[in-house]
Length: 165
Ligand SMILES: Cc1cc2nc3c(=O)[nH]c(=O)nc-3n(C[C@H](O)[C@H](O)[C@H](O)COP(=O)(O)O)c2cc1C
Image (cartoon, rainbow, N blue to C red; front, side, top):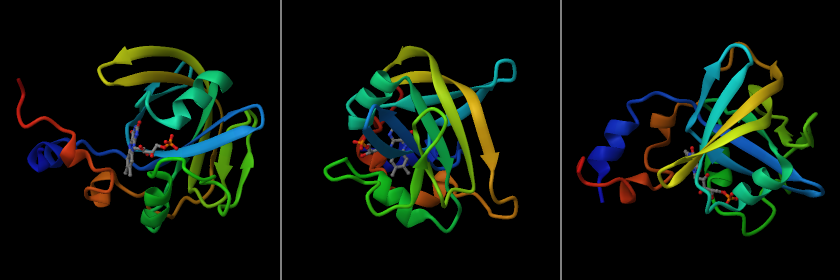
């Protein structure tokens, strides 16, 4: 549909994250670029999630999510978690459950653990606010992966509208 529109929106600089979700014994994780800090007190992060993703049901059921910040060298991991959950995407990846139960990747450069505080309709997505209950900066010198550097890995050039109607 619109490569130009996708290029334009990728000029809003964000990182690339693996969002971990869990409910009971079930867990999953998916790649997300649309994550941002939204409040100091309380500490809040906003996440925009497509409700069609398998991860959304787990996020709703578990009431928590983790944000694993990927490094510049982790493009392949972004692609791995950016694919639908046909098999257990976490099976071959070292991870552990955090305080909330949501998966924390060993290889992330920083991570946050959030409890869902609120959720709002946001067009074809849902805007989820998470209260940050824990966080760790694991590697200060490592550069984060930037959304623009993932090119069209997420296939959004086929989703964006052609114009601003
Ligand atoms: C670089 C990249 C960024 C993405 N950003 C988001 C995002 O911010 N929100 C979202 O809902 N999906 C995003 N996706 C799409 C999901 O990762 C993808 O649809 C995934 O298959 C969902 O996983 P699940 O079906 O296991 O829940 C992104 C994908 C990639 C590759």
